[in-house]
Length: 358
Picture (cartoon, rainbow, N blue to C red):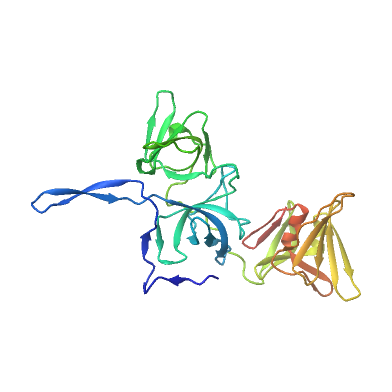
C-alpha cells in the first residue's frame, strides 16, 4: 500500500482548489474608501474536473467494494480517487451504467472528480463519475449539470452547462439513455439541475463554446447512492447452493474470501465429467470437462487452466488464480473455488451466503 506523505506540518487534510482553469467569474461589490463600492472578480470553482490515467493501485473494503484508486498519468501526474456508494460508473462505449467488476491494475479510466483535493502525495479527491470502456477512436463522454434549456425554432434544444461556458445542441437524432433502469428519458423531460453524461463532437471556438450532442445519459439526482450489497459471509460459513435452476442439497464453504465447492459433486450435478489422476511423484490432478472444454486443477496449486477439446482447434486460457488452491479432504473430496466453472461457461454469483452457479 502506498504510503501517504502529508505536506509540510499540515495537521489535517485541508481541501484546496487544484490547478485547473476556472470557467466563470462573478462580480462582487465591496465598500470603497469613501462609502463607494468597488467591483471585484470572484472566481467560481468548476463543477468537476476530468482526470484520465491508468490504475496503479486498487483498495477495497471488507465487502470487496472499491473505495480508493491510485492512478498515474503522463499529463496529470499521480492522483488518488476516493470512491463511495454515490460514485457513478459509466460504460463509455455501450452508453450504459456499469460497475467495478473486473477492474484491474493497468486499466485506463476517465474520472470526473471534485475540484478540491487534499494536500498530500498523491493528492486525493472525491470521484463523481468513473468512465470505463472508451473506444480508442472516440472521445470520452463528459459529465455536466444542466443549467438552462433553450428551445429552438427547429425543435432542437440548446442545453447550457459549465456555468454558461458551453451550449450543447440536442435534437431528434440525439440518442437518449438513463443510468438507472426504466424508460428512456425524453428531451422534453430534461430539466435544469439534471445531471447528465454527454457524448459530443469537439467544441466550436466561440463564447460560449458550442457542440452537438450525439447522445445524452440522464444520471440519478445528486445524493443518490447505489444499493448496499449483502455482507460477505464469515470465515468458514456454509453456503447454500443453487445449481442451474435447482436448489441443491450440497453446500459450499467460504474460506479466505473465496467461495469453495466440492468439485466432483457440483460438476456432476451440472452435467460435467470429473477425472482424478495421481502421479508417481505424489502430485494430483483433477479435471472437469464438457464436450468441448477441459479445466485442469493441480491440487495445492492456486492457478487453474482450461484447454479446448475441439479437434484441430488451438485454445487455452491463461492460468487463473481464483483466490485459493484446490485441496483434498479425506476420504477423497476435492474442494476448489466455485469460479472455476466460469471457464466452462457458467455464471457464478455470491449474494450473502447464497451461492449460485447457472
